[in-house]
Amino acid sequence: MTKPQMTLETPIVVGCQVTNICNLDCKQCYTECSRSSPPGEMTFDEWKQQIDYLADNGVVHLYFEGGDPLLRPDFLDLLRYAQKRFLLWFRTHATTMTPQLAKEIADIGLGRVVIDFFGTDAEMHDHLTGVPGSFERTWAGARLLRAEGVPVIPAAIVNRLNVPHLQRYVEFGTELEAEELGLLRLYPIGAAKRNWAELSPRPLDIIEAIAALDVPDGFRVMNGFHPHDANCCWVNAHITSTGDSIGCPYLRGMTNYGNVREVPFLETWGHPLYEQLRSQPIEGDCPECTKNRMLSPGGCRSSAYTFTGRWDGADPYCPNMNYHDIDVTVLPGTRMLPVVDRG
Image: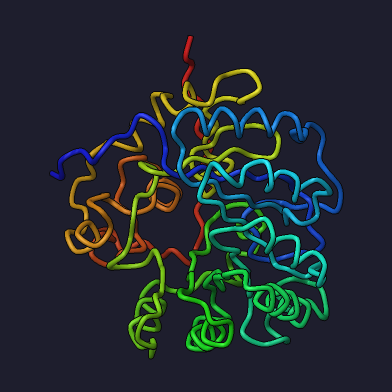
């Protein structure tokens, strides 16, 4: 059995979902976005308080996402407020980018902007977003950022439609003079769960497609598939737009460790289940994946729990850990775990 992994007193990376608003209708979305703010979204002052708290408690990397954060009117002010105290990234589909907005973002100074390219051409991308013309607008927004010298990372949620075309994403990275590409999993949450039958690819198809990529020297492909299958709970945390601390954005709807309006964030980090997910050994974890991902054993907890019903289950997306031949293209019944009572 694997030894327990490293534990930290505070996370290194905190993701902040600053809004649930989006102007697209993506089939593979990890949340259920809307055209208007849901009740109870965190205010500007509340986010400022959290930014102060996270900085004072040693968080190094802050990562903003949505929805699309650019649709929050005060988002650039949040970036400016946080900029000097963190390695700062945000994620967007860039469809609302303008020359002036790109210049303002460049003036703030960021580590990276992650840009979602859902498909490799307009037909595929627009089908997945549900909005005609979105592929061209995303490309236009990415080019505006690069024209201002903003570093970007093209990212793709790997699904059944785009898995035969992953080389195109490497080409996107080259065109954008990016240093890396993010190939992300389709997770069984949000809209992606509703569209699982259409979109979920076979893990071996993904692994073979990634292995076949022709990657230029100096260019990195980030991915969470074998042999880079990680349990990243040990380093990551996430706060939703309404203030819920859920640990990992890919555990959305499965965990809730408390609301940061009512419970200090580090108390949610110390939640018994959260600590379990960060430190528990995983029997029979893949040695090759563990070796390649900072000794974090057992793979993704979201996938493991969804398909095995166990928090200490092995991630079936790794072929070496899929002991029961689970077909991950078929989604089991929804499992929700009640939050442990801290009282």
